[in-house]
Every structure is written in C-alpha cells, then in structure tokens.
Image (tube, rainbow, N blue to C red; front, side):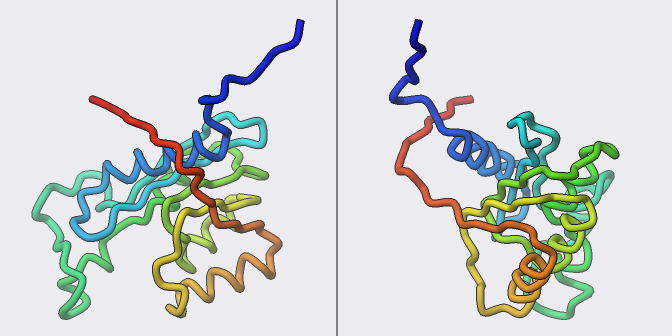
Length: 162
C-alpha cells in the first residue's frame, strides 16, 4: 500500500523554523526576539532556546536599552538563544545536530555552537551582515566546516491559537 504525503503537511524545515519562531516569542526583549531549536540528524528535537536574561533574573533587574553606556544596556547581561539552547540540552551530545534559528548567530554563539558539535545552522534572516560580529561568525563557520544556509520561506501560513 502506497503512502501519500498530505499536501498541507509541513516539511521538516518548515516545522523546525516555525518552532524556532515560536520559541522567540518567549523573549521579553522589546526590540529583538530570537529563538532556536536544536535537532538531531533523525529530526528529533534536543533543545530550545531564546534570548533573555540569566535564570533567576526578575523584570527590572537589568536594562533592555540598546544605547548608552555599555554597563547600562542589555548587552552585558542577555544570554543569546543558541547559548540558552546548548545549556538547556543539559549535557546532551549535540555532535552532528542542526540548529534552526530566526536570526543569524553572532560570533560568540558561533563559537559555542562549534564547541557543541553543531554541524548545520539554518537561519531565517541576517539583519546586519555588514556587522563584524556576523562576518566573524561566517568566517568561523566556513573554516570549521559548519554548514550554514538561509531558510527560504515557502509562504505557508501557520496559525497558532493559545
């Protein structure tokens, strides 16, 4: 008996990128919500992550500002989505896994992903390709042989009501 695929079924890329976007909605960052999902080669989910302050931080403990004196901005305190996903994996072996993210990783996340053994990164957008931290990430991934590709949206609409 032949098995046919439903026409409205999501591809793996559509499914995992959708989950990364949903994960990004957990971020309280008022300007940039970033989320990701780490997946084994057999398409089993290992971990999720999103950008936010360290565990235990309460609203108002740290600033969300993007500009001003560095110590008074979000940058020294925010944990990026990829780092959170690696930490949320609780020591699981991530060698050969893929990461789907709605944003291109920065150089610090690229280093952590390389150390964790991530083999491929699929991202939705790179808002600042001219920024040196993203250029360094691209160079690092190229030299280390980490596949990196831009996800091309298919136009499918997914409606989630909660």
